[in-house]
Every structure is written in C-alpha cells, then in structure tokens.
Length: 157
Picture (spheres, one colour):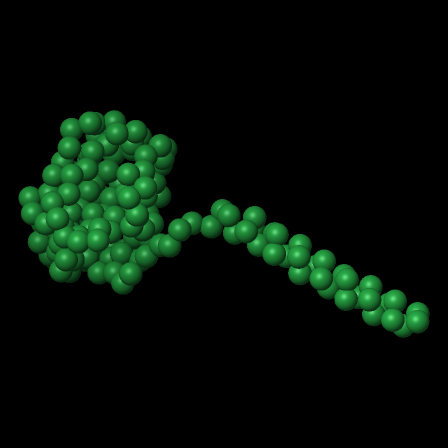
C-alpha cells in the first residue's frame, strides 16, 4: 500500500509538472517576434546588404507597420507581403523615424523608392506599377549605399 501511495504521488507530480509547463509555454514565448526573413538588397554594383525583416502579411500587420517605433536597428526592417501584385500606397502616419520604402515587383526587382520618408507625413507615396512587396528600412540607407530602381532583393519566405 505504501508503494502505491508513493507511485501515486510521483504520477500526480508528473501531471502537475506537465500542466504547469502547458501554462508557462505561452508566457515564455509571448515575447518572441513574428516570423522574420533574411533579405538581401543587391545594388547594381553587386554589393549586397543584409537585413533581418519582420514580415507584415496580414491586413492588421500591414496597417500597423513600423508605427510608434522610436528606433530601428541598422540591419533591421519590415517586409510587407501582399496577396497579389497591385499598385500600393504608403504613408507615415504615426511613424516616428524616417524610412526608405522600396517597392518591389513579383520578380523581386525594385520599381520605386521613397527616400527618407518624413515621420508623420500624411501624404501617400504610390508605386508606379504593381508590386508584391514593400521593404521599409532606415531612411537614407538607399542613397548612402547607391541602391536604386532596377536593383534586386533576394529572400525566401
């Protein structure tokens, strides 16, 4: 009988441990960022610049974008992914940092760049043609590194 009680205690402790782990896992991983992707911007001179980009692929994520962020690490950005290629318009409402916006077609070729978009600017910058992606990175990066229309991005979603 004593052996059975000890066995029951061990079984109960195991069950409690498993239950606590199931409760803690969401708390432990709540701070993890959504999917990220490595994005390489290749300029016409062949130079490659690597960014870790957060993915914005839902309406809510695309609407929020980089709003309210006070800074963006030099190697970070946000890649907006759309369901289909179309003309896209972006503005800087509630955005606190200047951004370069790279509008990218389905072949991952840059079609337009909005250089150093001003924080809080409500005017819309619209792509000249259909794009499937928009990459936002720190303002001034493209001019500083000679990135221009016709350059390419490389990434795998």
